[in-house]
Length: 391
Image 1: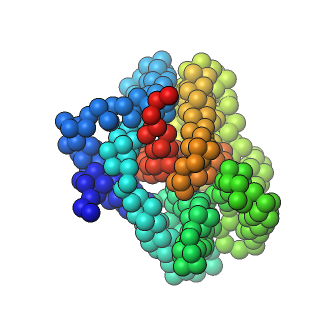
Image 2 (image 1 turned 90 degrees about the vertical axis):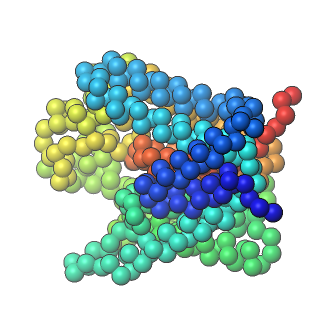
Image 3 (image 1 turned 30 degrees about the horizontal axis):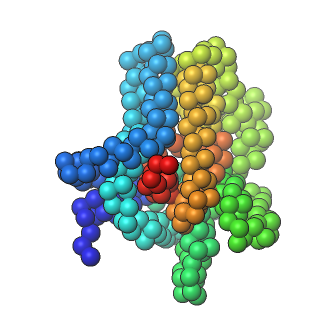
């Protein structure tokens, strides 16, 4: 049967979001237009979906905490420009929730699979054919930063694992296994530090939620952990470097880069405990707290830890808002899985677990492209909760 404009826009969104940030904003605008056109006819359905999604309120609270921190900072105008970025994630979630309420049958699974698979192949090709004379491997990155690419591939790996788990018939299982292996290879070649531990956390949560594979949970986790350890201590090429990022001395004062960045974040938080230094404050104040170069840079805009970064820039107020947000992000898909939702709910739960772990060394949630993609997967996985009739 013919697909609605909303469904077509959602599919295009799923196909293009993993490719580039420019395309992601274009397709988000397209979905917004599709939803807007339907408001005159189905506005009540959209507003009901928004009312029934508590994460909307949590994101609004998070944005409000950012705005308050900006207004109370020593550079209100600069901080407000950074605080506005919070509205992008609220926009991405809001239109995803609305579009899925209008057309819950949009084929997002095949669309995301096609895009993730194509980007995985492209990234593997970048590493395979882009070697440098010094023998160091080029990190797989697609059209984005290698870290953002690696974290997106981590989401793809978990989606492939869910598809493999729920696949019916040998051809479907073979396709899901091939997709999972392909995206796993691309993720590893990106050299993203916490992608492998993130996948491990996602697999662990999925195994706990899925009764059919609980008996396989331990061997699966051991296999993934062995692969992560092998890559961590590989003698050549880019590794995940999750451990070396924290413990390996690589600065003139003998400290690791991550430990320096985290120490600066904690010191800023101690000096601005309630509302932090304001969005963007970490970059503005970094050289004040650490005048010497860290690695090859003298000014850093990210603490490379989402939780410490938000404490530094938003203080206890923003940190509390972030914790509420993370709690709802995790609780909602778990609830959907326990109520019998399909593969997308299990994927959303695993994706949140991976996101929470990857945020220990990165702040990709602040990246508009990753944030929009993550919100789309999450909204898809929790759609059944919003469709339930009130008791």
